[in-house]
Length: 123
Image (cartoon, rainbow, N blue to C red; front, side, top):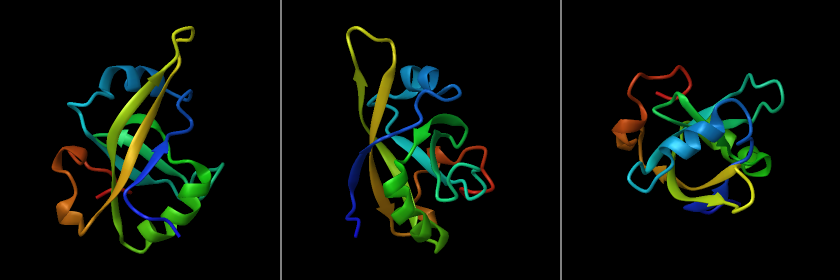
């Protein structure tokens, strides 16, 4: 059973523009990221994408966590991801992002900056 808040390190941060987006947007003053279900994801039907404003891809919730969290989201529970830290290695350019998954009491409590522009899976 998952207990919230839950801190996770995102996976899939080498895909798409995730590296550029993390380096640009993952900062303490940009605190909240949207968590968006991807039930049609060909690699994992439980996939949960983490993105800024619902469009700047940052990575995915780890598969084992997504397997427990996605049914909750599909049942109407609302979750957001809060910035925790960016991991950097002095010898490599690749970065990682850790977030704290928190549950909102309702969709109305969702952080407004997450949903500018909307998304068919998020709003």
